[in-house]
Image 1 (tube, helix red, strand yellow):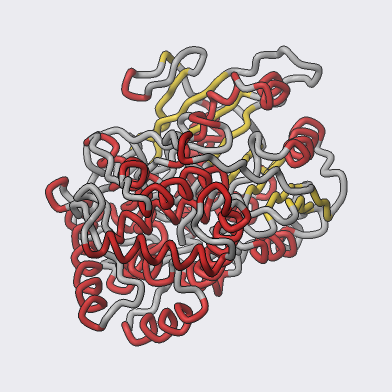
Image 2 (tube, rainbow, N blue to C red):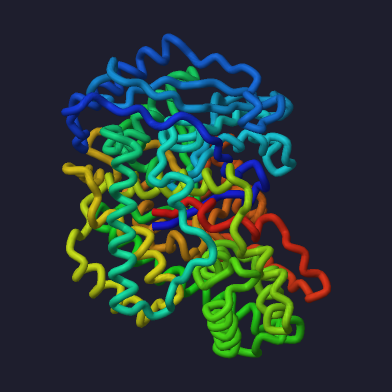
Length: 552
């Protein structure tokens, strides 16, 4: 299930940054895979957290590869690959921090740790938000802390493909895949899963949400905080919810931005089916916006007419890839971005309009592959981590008949992204890990009342549908509050898109006051259209899809 918070909302501060590094460590032959709720692993996590509290992180100037200027500083956190063997093979997680400025009314309140989602997203750039006006008060009270979770960036990076094995543009994604194409993608999924095992060795089973939670527990201790203050977006909300379930006594404040449905029965196969329906709603919203601006784009005065224009472009690049590099696969990736973020709508609409008028340049600029080898490596790394965590986290259907039946039926209602999403997750059907995790039943447990928490969600979010926020609130109990941005659907609400939402979040993080149990904010303004004479290819709309860590 794809989710992303990359290069958005708070500009480059929430961007994904990927760097080449040594492969993940392999374990000795015969090592056992982890088991969900393993008592030995929980005891190991407690032991390692205790050690970390006695040996806090030492922050120094960040290495050049991180591209993080002062005052951001960096550290390395050592954690065991397998918490059941706390003194066994170790991995190093990269951590970044901007110290609290103290230039505010609120007293210093410890660390605010951010996870941007994915899985596969790096939060290393998060401390840069300290320089943004919207974050001034929070930056005064909190040390802003980002980190790259295990497998991501330079944190024991995971890879499933050698550079020469990565698909070359243009690629194809049929709107209605044939049996032959499905067979081709099944073979590719099996090959990808084998590549993950071959390139990571026996370390592969240890890239899981449970281990991400244990790493977060150790990071909290190493920062010198008795309790965790946490901001998680997208998959980061599930990570935070599992943390709150397993370590309720170590929760101070938590913000869940664009919440994943934590119901164990939906993790992760069913969540991905739900996501396809959510993307279909947002695809309609994009087309309706383009239709309202028909005078600018001339793509159609109704959503159905805009769809017809889209199909003309799709058919054209299927026959002759735009610029030789944008086929239906690249086109789909670029326009999936429009189902995440409405601020790319003007550029995407202008690119379609220009193409139909004979100019493929804007479409090639926005949808073409990134020529930067480091960016391509980062994209591959993000997809590898996404796949490993989701496949390890839960059982997936192993029989193709189930996938084919469910997605064929779903595609009748949600054709835009159903099959692309299914093929992305298909390696989980043949995942080479014997024993998968069992999803945690998120929520308050007897005798462990959680403090106030705050959930933020957009009503029409496609990547994490609003029903997931309602389910998370129900599970977190009576002290969980929900802020809903009505009528909006951009994924990732916190961080400058909506002043009302940000005010609720700041009040809660600075005082602990949620302001109520069910709150609403008016939607942020829709983007203004961009004429064909102003079709600059703005950065937020041009990140290739692979840089957007998938969901959950």
